[in-house]
Amino acid sequence: KEFMEDCASRIRGRVQVTTDGHKAYLEAVEGAFGMDRDYAMLQKIYGAPSDEEARRYSPARCIGCDMKVVSGNPNPKHVSTSYVERHNLTMRMSMRRFTRLTNGFSKKIENHAAMVAIHAVHYNFARIHKSLRITPAMAAGLSDHVWSLEEIVALTSV
Image 1: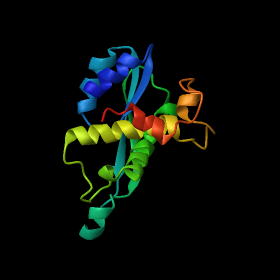
Image 2: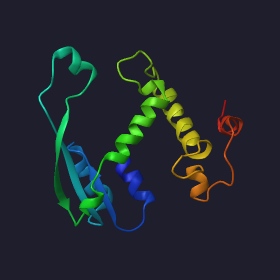
Image 3: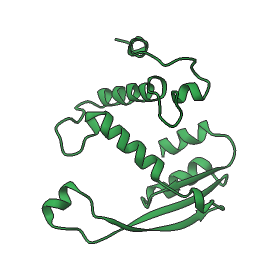
């Protein structure tokens, strides 16, 4: 709910929202965006799980998707969870704290939040993205150069 409200506070105008089948999103999206949204839910359909050992390390295979219009008129071409799923993978690959089935988890929520913030700054200000050929911050006009690690560390309050 807080995440959706934060998103809504940063976006002007009508939006298209796509979520997975998690029921908590229904109320959160409506509460944050009101009627000023086009909302679709994309539910993945999984095949039968394989043996117990393989299932623990690999999820069941996705064999299809069911798209349901929740409200408004979402454009079917843009109903996708792929961008957020790819970002989740990038976070898991970039931060050990998000690696599954390891002991690299954060022991304190404050440390976890700090690491996510550092990752976000690095991802947007210091990492050149292949598709953009510059950083996202430069593409958005928020920065005129690629930030160094020293500049990122200077932002922290140690």
